[in-house]
Length: 365
Image 1 (cartoon, one colour):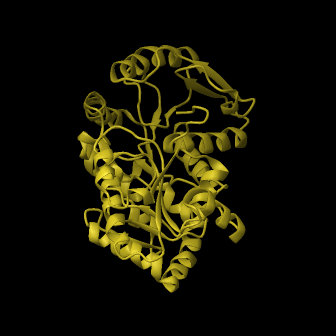
Image 2 (cartoon, rainbow, N blue to C red; image 1 turned 135 degrees about the vertical axis):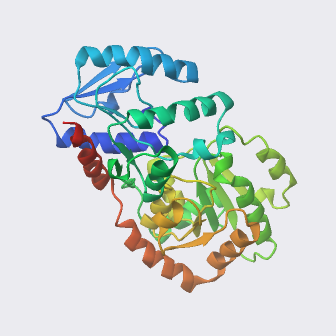
């Protein structure tokens, strides 16, 4: 997950959390196990020993070989106090203490959201990983309850560590907001979505709602979509081709750090109307930027957003469109949500995530 220039949600979790833990605990020796040549930027401290094991775990068959052959061989050799898996995959062949981070169980409930073989592998192995785990870390109370219910795992052995938010996300000056809008939307106001273009993210209904909103839009709003295509979005182009307001939808591809934070901070509102989220980091990123949020009223999103967002039914195009209209035209509502978002945003930080993760891990020491 630690790939330069390609950090996704779990990658950011790993980077931000383990960097802090390694620096805070110089008395502990950390072995970072990679499946390919690593970048030195991910060796954060002198107490980290990087190692590369073969094969690259990029396919279910290779997952098995990596975690059941290469990994246990290495772990038996170094005899660690604990093995932590930030993406949840464990070794059933190694008998030592193991803690996985289960970010969500979307694959258990929506198997068609993943490629067929990956879906089969996850649904086959993750119940076994839960049985094998000494404890489990997860990122929301929703995901904790889901783990307990789905796998019959003891609730007192699931630790909620929450996600944090990168320090780059902060409000920008009116001048920077103006320049950002000029660069991305020709100076027009816009809604922003940040995330992969995956079908569980509900991009189709978001775009259909935007099309509905545009029928009465007098301010020439745009829809800025930040992210890359993933499995299950082949029908997106067909939808775009049929849109009357296709020219108002702007795809930026992947953006990073300061540029990403400026695009979020210069938006009129952020949309995250997914069908399923284990946490929903963009919600907090937007709040840190003083940008109001529209998000789904399902899974973890109401828990994370609290009272600081407009909650919508992800299946209701009309409801999403009406929330867009409110954000575009009700300035008092926007300011109220921004103020509430400031309070919510203060509750999440990577420092807290690292502390909670460390507390979870120390049960094995």
